[in-house]
Amino acid sequence: MSAGELGRTLWDAPILEDPEAEERGRRIVAAAYAERQDRGPADSTPEAGRPGRRPMPRLALGLALATLLAGLLLTPAGAAVRDWVDNAFTSAPPPPEPTLARIPGGGRLLVQSGTGPWVVQPDGSRQLLGDYEEATWSPHGLFVAAVRKRRLSALEPDGSLRWSITAAARAATPRWSPSGERIAYRSGYELRTIAGDGSEDRLVAGPNAATSPALIAPAWSPHGDDALAYLTGNGRIRVVDGQSGAELAQAPALGDVTWIEWGAGGKEILEASRGFVRVRSVRGARPVLGHYQRLPIAKRATVVGAALAPRRPLVAVVLTHWKRHGTYSTVTVYGPEKRPRLLLTAPGSLGHDVTWSPDGRRLLVPWPGANQWLFLPLGRGQASAVADISRTFKVSFPRVEAWCCRR
Amino acid sequence: MLISMGPQPGEERDAGREPGLQPGSEADERALVREAQQGSSAAMARLYARHWRPAYRAAYLVVHDAAAAEDIAQDAFLAAVDALDRFDRRRPFRPWLHRIVVNRALDWARREALRRKVDGVESVFEPLLPPEEIGGEMLTALKELPADQRAVVVLRHLLEYTPGEIARMLELPRGTVNSRLRRGLDRLRETAAAERVEEGRR
Image (cartoon, rainbow over all chains, first blue to last red; front, side, top):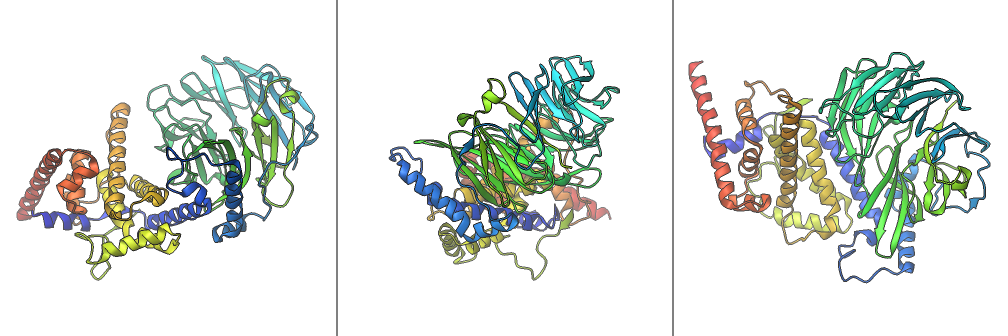
């Protein structure tokens, strides 16, 4: 066999290829290229950040940010981005209200402070549920599942106890399934599920090396079919039946994933690490993990938090941008084509626990550095902020667990 | 999944096979890179159209996994977009892109091999194409090679780089490239010879 014959064989041999792969890649690359254009010269000049370069003055930074914001509004890419949400645009945090008097858009919040989980009602009134370390809503907000050390408990929203079990090892990351039938939780090196009434506690994964869960929360399929996705300790996304533990699908995950979510009507699983965010398509009743799209992320930025909207293919990403003259943060929302739309720029660092409202029309963005919560609308409506959050939840700045519930 | 049969008679092979580029096309490519740097999305689209298929095929022949090959080719183009401003237009775009593709494919293949060892899983490769397909036996034989031999065979015989260029792309001594090529080709020749014997028997 000559070299030429081998070359021809390698070119002509049939290989497996999804016929849509090229088009899918073209769209993603075009979106990344459009985002590069939108970033403007401040972030894309080759000299930026090189040793010996003079620090950019604050005025220049302001102008660069203004250019970036204007770019998003005025360029064709920016105009296209505006098509998928209304044209409201927030560029800087609004002045804060002194106290939490209401939740914009309604619903109830479950937040976790150093004193325990709190339920916040639509009028801003709040109640501490007890001495628990993590908590999660049941699908309609009728109950809360909470853990402390080895105990997993189901509570009424007023904190009264429904049932409690003691796990073999420390319990963590409880997540109630959308069907309401089961609660997933980690116990040591195992992933387990238990019925909503506290019966039928079952092992669904682990503790062997191939299936043992990593230290991040699992994610239920929003379809209510009890499919459960989680990250394994060896870096794979694995989908199992939440009742039997039978494997339904698996695929390699990003390196160092810090967060996974299953949203967008069940069609996408989000993976976030400090450097990347990507969404993987999910198809079929018996879930098949499809191809992923990596979201274009600004250079020299760290991914702090990411959240997939519950019913729409929108992804909110919080980034911290490290610059010589200081740090600033942005909130970007990626639309159905995964094109970015800058929603907010704030000095300092924002919290990782960006949370969608149940209807997917607002974002709650914690801002620990300013001791504020920011409520950002995606459509028409006004952004708002609430001050003094630490004191509201007794001393420590809380983590937002979930925003419940769509009715 | 459908099976891509490669370019059909009369179909444009473009950057596909290109033993080198067509005369003048390297200058054309430099112009495309310059236009893309200046903000022409059409130029970027042409670069993508020109290089997608070779990038995908090269990645596939190293990893033998369609989803991974797609991811690797996509990542290479995203890296190209990311580094566009820093790209030196005096240098050719094609080897730069292929260097990313093959190195990422090698990383993937090594990770996957390690994972199989840890998990005790025999193989996660997709089902092989039936041997009666054109080149099916050769693909099977290629898959049986260690990943680092596959990579140099693909760079040499699919993308037609010289051993010196391959050594620079993979940051290896030239002697290592030559020995990997020799070992890989010996194995492939054995397969081809066996194929001929088999054909003779039919």
